[in-house]
Length: 71
Image: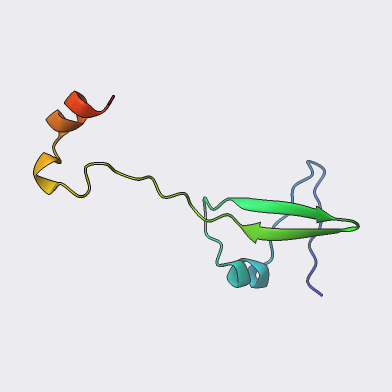
């Protein structure tokens, strides 16, 4: 079993084997699921933002984003 201590500010360090198992890196988001007396940690997959201009490279300029960004 892997353990860590809670600080007076209710903070803890996620042990390296846990970070490695979840492939966590700085800035990653963690989700907590409470299941009775247990808590399950999972890494939140980053959201992909769909770029409407990605398909049309010829329309991929700053001027196009300003002109059509609000549509």
